[in-house]
Image (cartoon, rainbow, N blue to C red; front, side, top):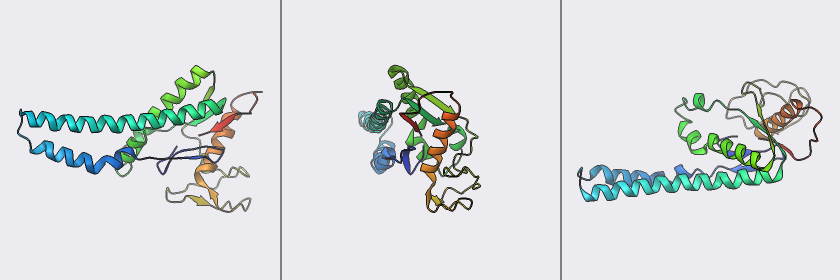
Amino acid sequence: MGITHHIITSDGVKYPNNRHYNKSQKKLLKLQRRLSKKQKGSKNRQKAKLRVQKLHIKITNQRKDYLHKISNEITNQYDIICLETLNVKGMMSNRRLAKSIADVAWSEFIRQLEYKAQWKGKTIIKIDKWFPSSQICSYCGASTGKKTLNIRKFDCPHCGKKEIDRDINASINIKNYGLGQIDNRNTVGTIGI
């Protein structure tokens, strides 16, 4: 799961982040500015407040609709889904990323994925949040060390593989780690997110 792309699977599929809040932010600021200028207790203030509320509801509905479509597609295609467990609360303390993380709504996506998987008889495996998925080369299994967020592709110094996509590499590692936690199961229809 990421901010640049909403979901990156071990199959190499990248679901885009539609940034619903970010796209509506200018309109929202305009409506909130109009609301703040209205006299308290007036009918016009109530109307302006209703416009702001409707836009917030529209943004929420757009986000939920997109998450429902992605979670439905994933639970229809795969029998075993391996997920990384993120410390969202800790990540929200980063003031530069907080708004983007809130807009992505990872917790809502995981909630939808869990109940849909339960309905459809699918298995969800959650990976420990301390598992270094982006620090391990998915080709040779060697540790490549910590990387800053701006590094999107890297070269493995151990096996010599060039231009490894950081997100796809991490999702493959999550899938492999998740499959290592279960015994003697058919791995057909498995995905790492």
